[in-house]
Image 1: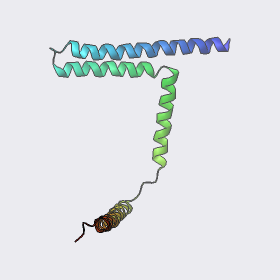
Image 2 (image 1 turned 30 degrees about the vertical axis):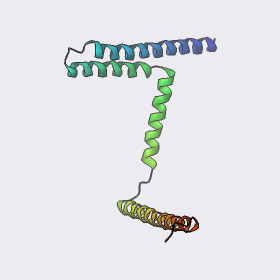
Image 3 (image 1 turned 180 degrees about the vertical axis):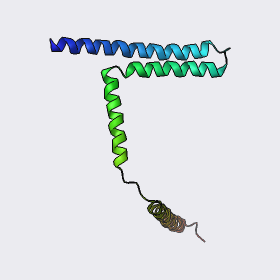
Length: 125
């Protein structure tokens, strides 16, 4: 009996998802079809369609899972210990210094290899 309830719920979820896609496609098509109407009204209409679709999707199992994930992610972001301004500036300057040093080393290596190739091919003066 429980499997029948899950099967009907999943069928209704699929139907809701299909209708959601149809609504989005119809909303975008209407946006371009009614091009003679002001852009503001067309955008507002498209926003309303998107809000209806989001509401419809949130009533499905997939939407509930997605909403749970977003809420859990929001809680996890609150737990993050963000670096202070001083730590951020110090780390950024360290990265700039390392990039400069590596660039200098690569430039010197390139210069010496170019000099060596010219010397070996007899083009050096």
